[in-house]
Image (cartoon, rainbow, N blue to C red; front, side):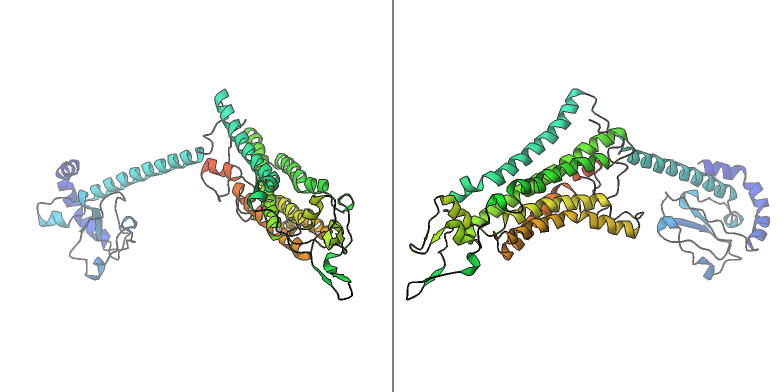
Length: 435
């Protein structure tokens, strides 16, 4: 209605300027293509019949109708349907409503400004979502966050103890006891007893082996735990924010320790179950069980010695050390930031080599069992495979892939912003989550 009233008031003035506008349009001036992006794609074209040809009418539509609008003849003026100007005679139909075009331009500019402001507000809201988490403001909030971490850690410790302590008293009776293989020997016609030389290696006492049980526990469990706490303190995930730095240190160390406990617990559980089920004889079997050629039986005073001599496959030292070192190596590789573009190739190679050093320690522990004649080579190899599998599986329960941009960030922190796999080291818990 407002457009019609303006047309009535300025109709005579517009008719007088029609001739001048027609002359300007024939000089290949720039076309006026006017479309409001939010309106319906229905288009009305006011065409000057004296200067427009059939080829000039082939004009694709604007970007808002998923096409591009181009025009050869400037006398074709595209207007939205709601801006169509009613005319009373033929001369008025040929005229171009300039004031309507200007109104469209102004209206479209206002609309673009509104859309830009709306987009800016949306962007600010989305970016502020990372900062919307505040430190605990009440005792209840503090207790809730602390309780979640404590409960998860308690469950991991329980699983670790179950995997290390339960196989013999609980699972061994359910399996019907240890698999007892016959003692390999041959008796000649003259009464001589021939033994299997691969099982007749000298016995090295447990106290004299290269890697004792106490050293194994320290290398496989305590050393990685200490490393997780130190690295999480030295290399916090959000170094530019004090509250986030404090909270992320706790969560990072907590995630590494939980992954280690679950990995070692599952590795020990599977290793002991396989030992009971396979019952393979050790290389020092005859010496450990004190085989008597006269009676053709084991003469060891302690039944545990004979049982220990029958649990060679797989190697417990190899599986436990490789499990702990795998978790530690993956943790270091995640901190190395392999996917960060600012790291030079030389430093990237140095970081990879340094992060893989724990596997070298595991290889030394496993091969020491061959030197001590406590395991066959296949036992050590099976222990490496089992430990690496359990370590990698448990690690990825708390951390993303080492090839992810957020490889150094626990999944529990990534879930706070709901964007796992998207680099957000400077945004996680920024300005928040401090305990």
